[in-house]
Length: 308
Image (cartoon, rainbow, N blue to C red; front, side):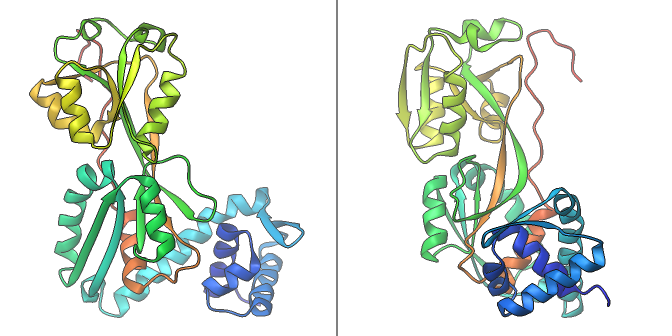
């Protein structure tokens, strides 16, 4: 018995969905054929890869350890096939992206400019909204691929960790806290905060920080990152924002980043809807994104700190 790409595809699909029937549909096999492929792979690999619980399957320790390698082999095989068929630049059609505001406004322009040089025949329709609306677009079939920063991923969507994002606490230029050293949440007591609206990935990070602060003076909600930053510039309060969003404001000096003792980080995710068949173009773009991520931003340093 030989190892086949189809066996690995079934393994990866079952790992992502937790269901043999759903996995079979994703790889265009019947459920019995998918079951045979998975059983043969377990025999070849030397043991079970899943814990069977009723009709569901979840990875055991062996399965989790072997999944990364299997995903790499499947992705590599698809990339090879794309190359054999004429390469990525032979693709055409419309790609519908749903991006949360931070990713869409501050990360994707540079990435898409690079992508277009490699796939000039692709037309891109990008919808920029909050993370909750991106999820809705995937379910409705109006979005091929979602990119969000929310940690609250709906259970009916598939999420793949794409990149990390450094969050910074920002204040207006000249704020008294900007002259202090490394700050803890306790040092932020008594401040007013500007926050994003429900459905925003940034709101979740802000709430997590505010829960650690002993005494918040109040909050003002904004549905726009740009408007929120202008509010901070005008002295309305502090905010927690992505380092990608505030980069230009920090460089100009209109905002300052307050250095925190513990860095605040979150994840960016690629989202797909299991019930939606991914087009060749969407699959190719997702593969491209795995090798092309936003540049990481350094953590802010306290006043007088030596450059790294």
